[in-house]
Image (spheres, rainbow, N blue to C red):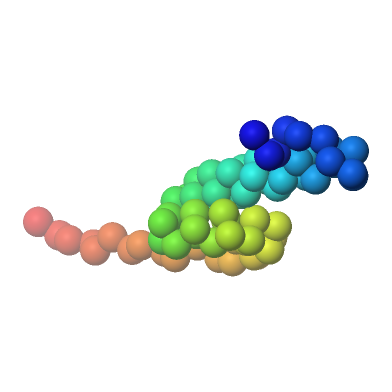
Length: 75
């Protein structure tokens, strides 16, 4: 497997690739959970969190929730 082979760089490339993948998965789940909490699109934010995890995690912490108002019905 290429990721675990040591090359001229001492194997650091494989380690950074694995850390990058771990960061992307963490970003995916963090953004998905935060989007659900804010009443936002979970699929869209999960995709954004995977493709650009650091930017997505900062961005989702700066947005406000979408408020869902219940109708006041009198019976």
